[in-house]
Length: 152
Image (cartoon, rainbow, N blue to C red; front, side, top):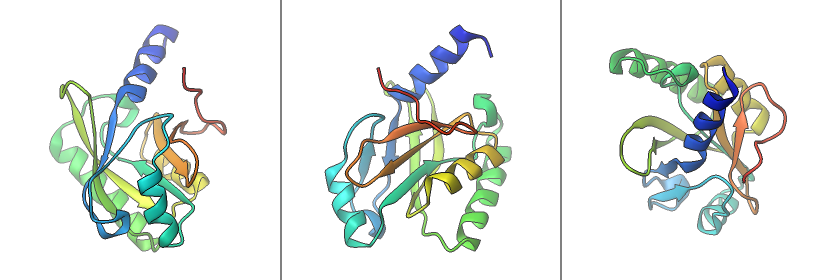
């Protein structure tokens, strides 16, 4: 990927609204995550349930290349099956552009360790995923990369 294209793509990821739909694991209210920001209300809910880490991921549009809805949905169902088989609770979520120009069905997974989240992201062809730890900011993590991307 050319440097300019990669920077544009990473800029889009940083500008994305990562929306967790109301779910028992997150206090039953919608939560909106942003790269580089703290999320104290979510942290409190997760801590109360014994979670210290979380991940926000999807199987939609591998390589950040648009794909048909049916193909995306089948891939997402495979990801869900893998997470459930691993014993993880899943909250429905959506990643969406601020201007509403695009969105992707996503999943919020409380308690999913960062290394496992990166492995799932890589296995499903994702360029990056959102990860976090209670008390810390949400971080964009390149799949296959150890360190989170810096926030400008």
